[in-house]
Length: 118
Image (cartoon, rainbow, N blue to C red; front, side, top):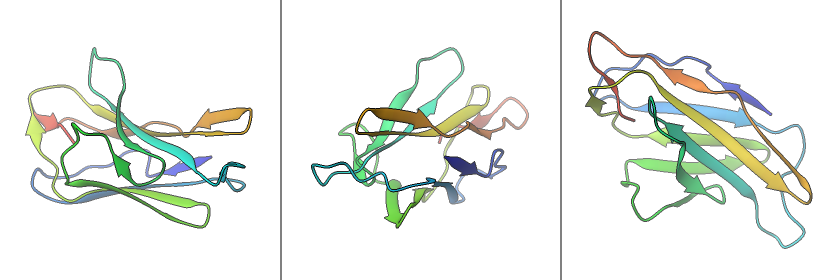
């Protein structure tokens, strides 16, 4: 799985988009696609944002959305928010049949003492 970009510089209040491409179909035999998007803040464990391509977890604001076109998957953030922290990492993960994997991290770097909370 490839993920682009690997580093994303954005300004708070602006939109952001991250894409990943699978080398093959991620469609499970049950008809579902287990593609997840996670974010990780400094010193914290990864937390889920999107599951099964486009479903937000209940705690995730609607400025996050996920979509798919074939084997291309996209995470969109309509408005990046700033918070005091280090860089934020975003990553796609998938599970299909007995195989699982993930893309590389996309880094949203800090600016000054502030960084995007995504």
